[in-house]
Length: 232
Ligand code: URA
Figure (cartoon, rainbow, N blue to C red):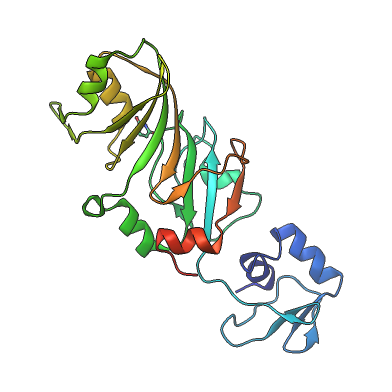
């Protein structure tokens, strides 16, 4: 692996920042100060030091992104900006968004290279809760709430009952375990309402960090990774 990529993966900074560290002679490979960022290292055997401290390679990365509207939940798209482009640096070929939010949906998106965890979180049989804040077009009434709490059978899809928490005349928290195409929008439409704004605020044990503005991200804490079932 390239040295600058390794250092970025080890959380020493963005690709640009670690190049700067190398230029400033802060990095040693097997006891020798290096000054080229594109040298190849053996991440499993070489000893890399920053200011004399050994750097530990992180095989798995876990980021929480507050997805902004207008970007697609994909690693590559010919026409649209992707969620991966919200990151300052390239995270690696193996890093991907865990699940999808619509282009106009905001909120919590896990971005990781832990395929096993992604499979666990997205598999229906594991009943992982996803909670959304929903701003509705029409006033919410009891009939709508009851409709959302029941199974919804459409011609081409079945949605299991949602947990509903009414926040105000026009606002809800909706918790579902599936993640079918346009699910919340279609559920609301089915009960005679429409989604004006949708934001995911919880994904399993992970709660959206209120300090993150749309488009901002941070690494998960060890505690968050552990609770989610990732590898620390
Ligand atoms: N339901 C939707 O309709 N859209 C999303 O992005 C997520 C859930």
